Amino acid sequence: MQVVTIGGFKGGTGKTTLACLLGVAATKDGLRTACVDLDRNTRNLSSFLTLRRASRLECPDHVMLMDTEEDSRANARPRHAGRLEPLVRLAAMDGYDLMIIDTSSGNLSDVYEAHLLADLILTPMNESPADLHGLFTKAGQPAAPRINYREMLDTVRFDRSRAGLAVQRWHVVLNRVSALASRISNTVNQRVAAIAEEAGFESTWSLRDRVVHRALGLDGRTVFDMPADGRLTMSELAGRSEVRALLSLLNAASERVVSEQQFAA
Ligand SMILES: Nc1ncnc2c1ncn2[C@@H]1O[C@H](COP(=O)(O)OP(=O)(O)OP(=O)(O)O)[C@@H](O)[C@H]1O
Ligand SMILES: [Mg+2]
Image (cartoon, rainbow, N blue to C red):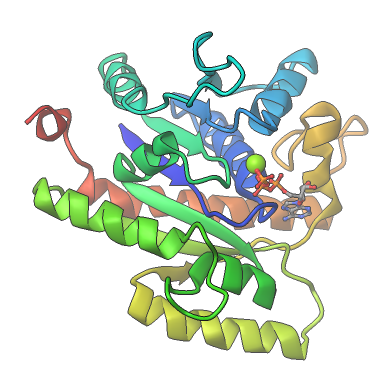
């Protein structure tokens, strides 16, 4: 089984949209897929998948990791650590091909764990300097984000190498890309290429801004579902191929899959 974690400490970049699109695409391709929603605050992925089920659309299996009763008491410190690994192990034993974990933008222990357990990490960002800053400014630089995604990724990599685990692939996905070229998008693209080298990620295919992706919050429909009138638009077809290109990263990642035995060690 491969684990894909979708993360980034900048809110609203498209993590949940991407998790849902990949989950639906993989399910339609016949992969036994589990989607895990770690965002206890918005529960957006759970909501999208519930809408899909209500609309009788094909769905990946879905788990929402809730706080325990004890955790939800006022002022109680959340206890999230250590709950994902058994879930990953069970899903692998149960014959799932793929687990997609949607994370929240907070620096919680289960978000760290989701990154640690991933074979492939996808970080969506909008073509905006604000997203670049929120995601990739190094700790210690002026006005660096207080919760620093790059720093967490460095820790994840260090912890994995100490445990003798394979290096993960980390891809940054430009999302909501405009069809119109602009000075800002050129600048952002150049900066992403420069940061990619030193931060150790690859910059990957992008997703365009498409109205149809917002239908997820309406009735759970994606570009992979036929519209009621049976006619797919060019935008929907193009949207499909963008998501499929991302899904194809799974094949490349499969050589580096970490076995359950390694985690047990
Ligand atoms: N490619 C896209 N085209 C059009 N709209 C998009 C696209 N990707 C995301 N959106 C919209 O952008 C908004 C944010 O997306 P989403 O909720 O997936 O982000 P997120 O990173 O999961 O946010 P959060 O940090 O709150 O969990 C939503 O309104 C969503 O419908
Ligand atoms: Mg989200």
